[in-house]
Length: 258
Length: 368
Image (cartoon, rainbow over all chains, first blue to last red; front, side):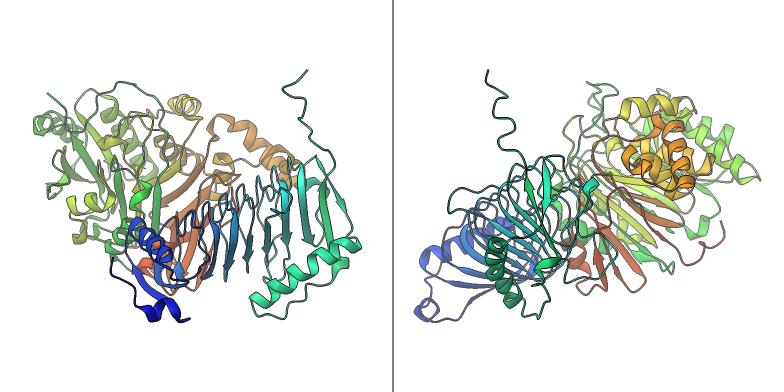
């Protein structure tokens, strides 16, 4: 690899890659090597479904993605900030540990599977199985905020962290969350800006009104979300929200014990 | 001697598990386009397959013979041609026959022999003619004759084999064809050997289907179909869907919505929540067609001469997105594959699971 010009490292100018049909392995290796050499900002143009973008990267870099990134973007990611100008495909933020993903468009299915830390903001609707198996541990508390609506199995088997669905950026006749919402949930918090019918919910959860501490927790997240998308969103009407929490603790704690 | 289509049959009639890529397009104004778009889009999903199956379905490709059934036949080798043709000519009026032109390459070195037969409708009554064709296809496919019928519809054809789809495209010289519907498939078989007959699409009359997923109910579906004269001979789960469509829509007269509700039946709790007349209808369909419903994950593209349908299993275990630009609708496993050939889309979304997304031609295809 050619030595990177000093002005690229020192300046705030981004390193621009015209991706086109470059194979994903080559692209990811290139980003990894450049990040290791000290490049802080990347602009990826013309992205065409390359998989595993920024997989496992732990550098403090920011990556702008123009085009459509492929499956499993930011899998195991541990620090970078990725902004997608377009729609994301499936399984973004899979087992992500730290960092931030911002999607200016639609999100696919299985967003933030087993996510352990960091944040994901999706401006519009997301697909099925968003935030399943999310987990949290002391200060590692992942957050997913969805500006639109979510499909079935939202927060299935959720164990920690926080999921927020706003239903604010799209206007369609779908319900704000799909069926089997929070099925098997046993940790974490799920906020929905609207009401969720009881038959759509898993059997392990109950619906609550927001309390003062919820408002305090949510306000900076929502401000950041609105600021990120540069939109004057009417999302601070906390009376409209509901909170979904598991009502059992370690329900299977004795499954393998006498 | 090793057979050209690699059918060693170590696991006869076993089901197949696959995790594949699919894409299709339909021009609702009936405009015919070369398949290049679909090849390029599919090439972008190269990694969804493993080179053990690729195929294309194309509609509107034989305008000169549009009233004739076109039988694409795959022969183990050329020695199998004479006996089958004797059988065919005895039974049907074949007005034109030719080799399907192929171009061998480094990538596709070993391959079966392909011919196509343009067959005059065997009866004046359309339904009678269709039934006779289906019976003939079943008879050929289950006989030990070294030949399989790959497609048998009018003004359409299926081209498939062992290889990556872009290589299969070049092998069949598909840049020489123009169609108003194209479907394509990239196969990743994991449970049965990849062989030429096991690639997608699977087709009967003008039905064709490409499938990403696995049909766990293959055994019960196959036995159910046998009661109606359909014999599954191609050793791959997806085959049942082509025959189920023929049974449900052509023979039993179900609408596509109803047929979809048979293939991907709503859960009982959802049926219970339906208003009274609809509830009764869906209850009946679940009971009557219990053995026709599909279990397992799937995303399908179902094509016929009048349209293209996308359908997911009811809990969305495989990806499927839909997009539109002008009069062209795309359905694909991945959005990026569509964007490669059409960056500026007017609509782009993922349809809800278990509900068919149906795009039909603006007007019925010309003279059939």
